[in-house]
Structures are given as C-alpha cells and as structure tokens.
Amino acid sequence: MDRSLLSSHVRTLARGPGRSRNLTFNEAKDAMSIILGGDAQPEAVGALLMLMRFRSENADEIAGFIQANHETLPKWLSNLKPELDWPSYAAGRTRGLPFFLLSALLLSQNNIQIFMHGFNSAHSASGSTEDAIKLLGLDVAETEGTVKAGLDKNNFAYMPLRSLSPINYDLINLRDVLGLRSPINTVLRSLNPACAKASMIGVFHPPYISLQAGATLLMENGDAIIFKGGSGEAERTPLKPVKMTYTRDGQENEIIAPALLKRTELEEPDQELRLEDLKDIWNGEKEDEKALSTIIGTAAAAVFILQKAETIEQAETTARDYWQNRKPL
Image 1 (cartoon, rainbow, N blue to C red):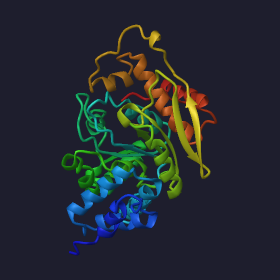
Image 2: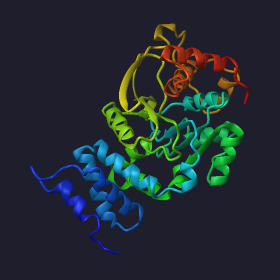
Image 3: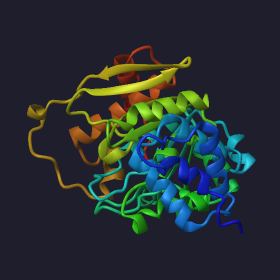
Image 4: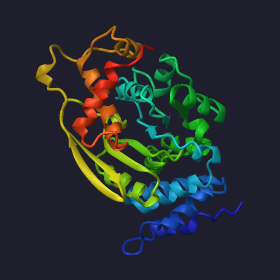
C-alpha cells in the first residue's frame, strides 16, 4: 500500500495561511475514490476529514465525494429510481419520536415510492429509525432482493447504512474516534444513491442548508427540499414557520411554510410518548395534535418537491386528504 496516496490532498488543505485552500471537485472525487478503494492510511483519512471540517467543506468537495460514491455503489441501486430519496442520519440523543416515518408511510400509501436509508449513532429513549421501522411491521432491507421487495409491496424500503455502504458506515463511525462529525454526514444526506426524482433533506445547523443545495445542483441528481428539522431529520416542526430551500430546474429557491399549530392551541403540555405510540397514533387509537400536524407538514414538503401541488398550502391540503384516507397498520 502506498502510504502517501492522500498526502497531496491533505497538503492542499493544510499548507498554512495564504497557501491552503479547499479541494476542487476533481480533487475531492480523487480523495474519496482512494478512501472508498480501501487504499488510504487511517491517519490520512482522519486528517483529511478534520481539515475539511475545520475549513468548512464546500459544495464542490461534497459533490466530488458524492460522485466517487456513485461510481462505487452497486449498479442495482442507481437503477431503482424511486420518486423520493429520504436520508435519516440524525444522531438521536435529543430526537423525539420519528413521526417522519408516518409521513413516509402516508406518501407510500398514495403510490409515492420511497427509498429511505440511514444510521442513528446515539439512540435516544424514543429509539432509532430502524427500531421504529420494525415496530411498524416493516422489514429492514439488508439486500438488493429485500429492497426491491419492499418497494414493490409497500412503495417503501429502508436500508441501513451498514448494508448500503459498509465503508461509509465505518467513516461515519469515526466520530467516536475523532470526537466530531465529519463531511461524511453531509455527503450521506445528499447522496441519493437510488437516483430518486427528489430528496427530503433535514439538517440540524441552518448554514448547511445552502451547502446541501449547492451540492445537489452540482450533481444534477434530482431535486431536493432542505430545511432545519427535528434533531436534523427531515421532519417539519408545526409550531413555527419553517424556511425551506428547494432546487428545481437548476435553480435554488426558497419558500416559507407557515406554522400549522400555535402553542396556545395545545390544551396541555407535550405528552410523554413512547415508540409504541407511533402505531396507535396512525390507527387513531391515540390523539396527539402536535404529532398529527408534524406528520401532515412533513408529508406536505414531499408533496411540494415532487410537484404534486403548486404551493406548500396546497400540498398541506393534499397531505390532509391522504391522512383522512389512510389504511390501518
């Protein structure tokens, strides 16, 4: 193994004041290709990722990393071409129940095919996305066959990162070693590995919204709607207006989704909900106005980016119609 394969890229990032710079698209693609090929020294990988984080990664670097991944991932993934890509990579410590899953199921019952992928490193008391998938009676798809079966049967498939891309699973887990998230978290949110028509992207830190949009536009890999969501998931809060950035026709655009619920409208404080309550809320056996508004608002964002409604308000009406006609789990 050539121990110096990444050294030129590390040097570019770290030369010093006035001489260092971000990587170009091609440099980033080359660096990620070396990493994905398993040919990089672990010390060099850590140095590269932390330097990118320190300098603040840009859209060219993220797009270069994504392109390298697309050239490495199995061809069957890019042939799936569902309507919606839905990454779920929130860390999980402060995350509440994953109501966005019920939004996704609502869409899937209305012939919108969704490929969800993810990893939640620090599970909260409410459980991970994978835990919730199982509780709702759906399969966690670990193979090509189970992904395709889920899409065919339910218009929905969730594939954990460990199965989607073992090497990216190792890279995202470097947080335990380095103490910080790396650009890999940003890459996985914009990856769209199945080449879907559009993506639902949630971020925790608002400055990453423009970065995700820029990488999406550079990749020309479907549209995306991007917003600050619950703990970084693509889940819309119903309690305040939400600024949403979306890409369409090669342009970056912005809308403001109005608040769906006022805190004063809640008759009592937020309920302490358990993971098991997800199914009860869906089946109408448990009422929670905030949860319902979260589900409707999140589904509406997907309806809007898929151009099944002209405005976010019309998308909300469509999502409410979906909810009224949902099938029990």
